[in-house]
Amino acid sequence: MKISNNRNGRISRRLGGVLAAACFCLTTGAPAADDVLGFQTGLGTLPLLGQGKTRSITAENPTGEKGKGGMAIPDPANQAAGARAADDLGQGWKVRPFIRVNTGQTAVLMDVKGPGIIQHMWLVENIHGENMDRGMVIRMYWDGEETPSVECPALEFFAVGHGRVGQVNSLPVTVNARNALSCFWPMPFRKRARITLTNEGSGDNVLVAYQITYMETKVPKLAGSFHAQYRQAKTADQNPYVILDGVKGQGRYVGTFLAWTQMEPGWFGEGEVKFYMDGDDKFPTICGTGTEDYFLASFGFPAVYSTAYSGSVLPANENAAPPQKWSVYRWHIQDPVNFEKDLKVTIQALGWGPKYRLLKKDMISTVAYWYQAEPHASFPQFPGLKERVNLTKPDPAPAGSR
Image 1 (tube, rainbow, N blue to C red):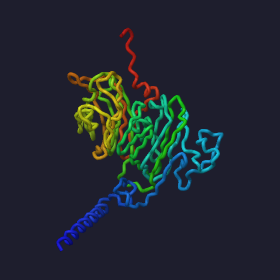
Image 2: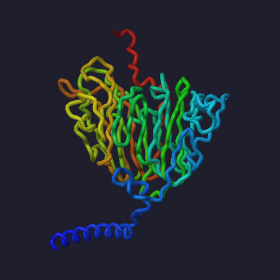
Image 3: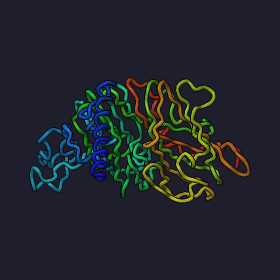
Image 4: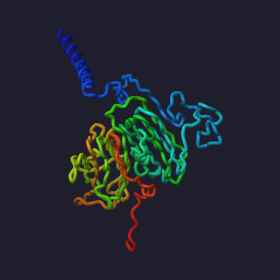
């Protein structure tokens, strides 16, 4: 009887928890279970059978519509429309597995009606030259907005800096050989989702393969929209460097990708990462203790590492001859930074040896990731291709100098 009573007690407590959760939803206006099933991902939630409909957009099904995949017909006269290897096989035999994006062109990767949530995006490009160095630009627009909520060089959006692919094995972003780019950031939309890829480089991108998987499902009122913003600066012009600023409204900051070009030997990462939120002025609410500390490392970045929430993915040596290229990421999955009214994020360019020193020759570019209630404030002017490509080129020495 003792065992039975204990068991019944456990069952009663579990049922009580379920009923309490249900009552909470009814009394507080929180979303019902069916409204959030599309947002439930991960191994433990796989048995939960929701009402959402899975759709996936590729070059073989550019609209994602039901029963519309693999319908392309071989067209030898139009090389950009398909894989010529299928010319003799006919419809249904891998006729259009990729697209071509020539210089100056913008490809619409996704344009669908909501409501829904993007769950995964995979992108592979045959990139080279300027396209490898910030020439391809990805933009995302939610619910009919005219200005993008995501605007980044495509590679850096996927945590690839300096045009150098390093393996990323993290929870929301993965990068596999040779340049297979994936992200799993959940991206809800209510009325419409539109994603474009623009070739601003000087060379044609002859192979762009992609897959965007999303679920047609309800979107709870409390769900914020996904945002990602690219910035860049030379430390001679900006120190502290601004990772993000001008954000207005309620939201959650969820990640930072940073590409740092080190131009002086010696440790460069003494700078603190600071979060100014909800009216902070001179001093921030959150103040870190060092660059490697923020990226969950210690005593520098002595080795390449890639984990679920942080990583330093390119081989580099702080004491070797410059330039040294660093690509580091930090995802706030378990510790999102909530803000109610506004947010600004900065990092100091501060070196060591034999005491703290301001770094005046380095170059930094970043992508900041966050969710917020719309509408969002306008982004800064996106740097042009020449500015993006020239970021990591040292300034010319003054005349007469040696």
